[in-house]
Length: 215
Ligand SMILES: Nc1ncnc2c1ncn2[C@@H]1O[C@H](COP(=O)(O)OP(=O)(O)OP(=O)(O)O)[C@@H](O)[C@H]1O
Image 1 (cartoon, rainbow, N blue to C red):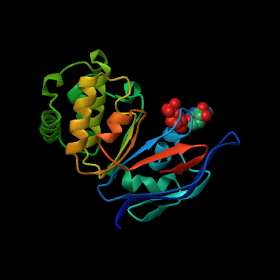
Image 2 (image 1 turned 135 degrees about the vertical axis):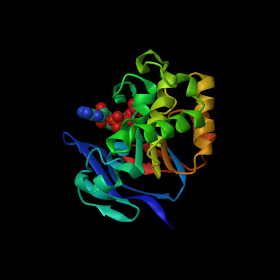
Image 3 (image 1 turned 180 degrees about the horizontal axis):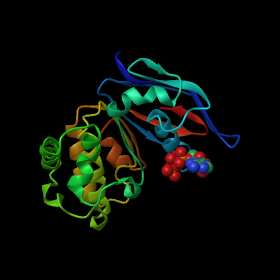
């Protein structure tokens, strides 16, 4: 099977406390999987390891079947992996929606005109054109999540890692996120506590608990 991500016997210790041990997982091409588990079981930590933000204590990650030996190895896959953190509030770098959404493209050297064209296309796709010139910190939590997602999607990542994408959202915003994610054909790992949300996206659900990952 062609895989986007493989975890090979990944373990993580924090101040000598074992968070999880010997985790193996395969994320197939354009497969969507969900990870559930109790608070503090290590779901966010595992997602950060896959996103290349922290290193495992032992074991390793493969991205497109290439072994990642240290965090530097992730640099060539940065644009391929879009990571949505649990709390997006501190994730924004620019005051307005459109400026923030195009920020990563501009950072890659894309001209302002071209970046604006692509930014407006993403806003249209996600049906948030009306938010284009709004100040991000005045937006609701749900709107901020969708704007953060737009900022990831503009780079056309092949893999999405989403940490609690519907945390604290109302039913309407959750429905909107489900529509958006169901329309996206990408490899995806979704961490969530919301059973109904997960079930509307995938039937492949893993539980991380007691230091191990199982179905
Ligand atoms: N920066 C940190 N410093 C110290 N301990 C941390 C840090 N981040 C996480 N931890 C600890 O690591 C463990 C796993 O945390 P993590 O956030 O990965 O769990 P989680 O399953 O995502 O929890 P939740 O469902 O509450 O979001 C917890 O015991 C947590 O207290």
